[in-house]
Length: 316
Ligand SMILES: CC(C)(COP(=O)(O)OP(=O)(O)OC[C@H]1O[C@@H](n2cnc3c(N)ncnc32)[C@H](O)[C@@H]1OP(=O)(O)O)[C@@H](O)C(=O)NCCC(=O)NCCS
Image 1 (cartoon, rainbow, N blue to C red):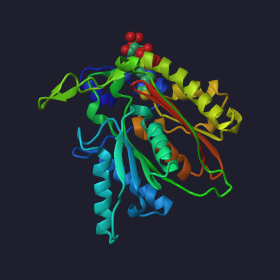
Image 2: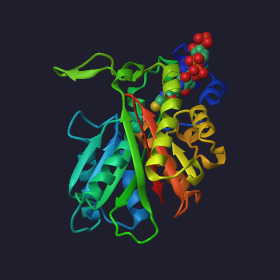
Image 3: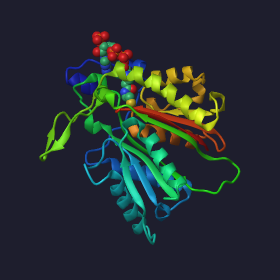
Image 4: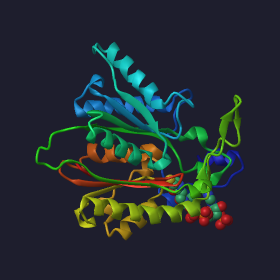
């Protein structure tokens, strides 16, 4: 990245990026690869971990701000890819039910989890894939060193399943989601498609300091609100899985909530900010790495363009 910036006459260094953000590595997709391709891989891994088949799924909620197309939704494209793969592997049928996208930028996964949980609790769906998938490399301005060093591509997915209460108390304990559209200008991609052409600027714009200030405030508020809704306190949290935007934002949130950093799952060093994919990627890392265990209480929270923010409290 630093070499890429230097080739464009922009000055940066690994030291600056690591010190200000905590980011050491990021991943960009190959040409031709889309958010649905990343989502496909993440969903296959989630289904395998849950011991389920594609045909068991009756809802797909996909959070993205970098969809494959204007429409149809990336969720429906993903549903078709999962179905094709299942049929090719000899399954009798593919995924059914509803599939749609949620657009809440870096809070997308928190919004998607909340929506899927609500649809399950009302009996509309029984088994849902909830996915965050992004190809932010497609909307970065590589002439802007203040933004292009921060974001990466990725996807993560979970399966949510309706179940009878088994006494364990496992499941989503509470959600808290918010938006305030007056902050549109501090983090946005202001372009649109009109008359067959891109109108405006299709690359990401951000006022980093304004975003930083807003993020640390609302992340504390969301954490406290979701804990209060669930009748819990900070002391009940085994793990904080925050949106992976900047290590300093995570440290600040942990400090405010009086949580030690060894209770915070940190993957921003490995992926950078992957927007809607960052929380499920971090959760996957923590579960597969044996950090997060059944019975533990996990607080996930995100903040992003809009502005949007929110938190979900889960007993694993
Ligand atoms: C973007 C961010 C890392 C910048 O860090 P910062 O400590 O606020 O840095 P500043 O904006 O004050 O810039 C300090 C200096 O570094 C420079 N700088 C900016 N990007 C740089 C880069 N990639 N390499 C080297 N220098 C850089 C600035 O131009 C500025 O130089 P100046 O003092 O000569 O004007 C930080 O504001 C941030 O993380 N904000 C939140 C972003 C975010 O999380 N967005 C997603 C939310 S979902």
